[in-house]
Image (cartoon, rainbow, N blue to C red; front, side, top):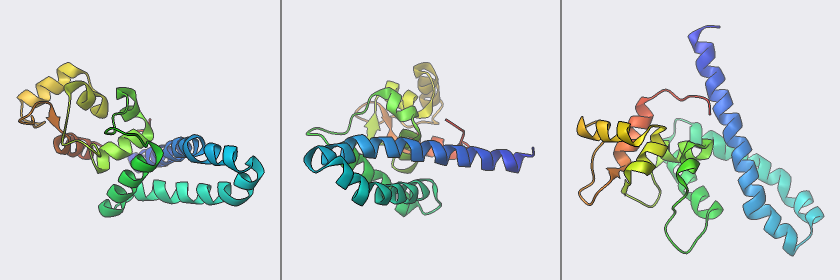
Length: 165
């Protein structure tokens, strides 16, 4: 298998994993609550197929070349699928998921200009010590109020080739 085939395989695997995660989150965050209010059959008949189509489109947007579409889709999905009274603050492990990586690559963090060193490490798939080293070398930018800028995390992620989750 040549390098081009490996890259394509990684992109397909990334997309499949992203579709799978988004499908599960949409089901639990949106469709299951609707089924409790309506009926499971009505939700399945009217919405499930439509949501599958949308999930495919969202994955294409998130992984596509159109950065405006990717950012817009990422932000809309985060706020629709993870509503809350406070700022978006997922566990560090979320950033290593296919959707977490797509969000990190497109918007960095949807509600923060800077993140803590542990969150930056999770977003980058590195240890905290490595993040400190990258900050010392100027690869990652420190925020004046503390932490690492999400813009610099996003920039580092977008310099790396995508890899399978």
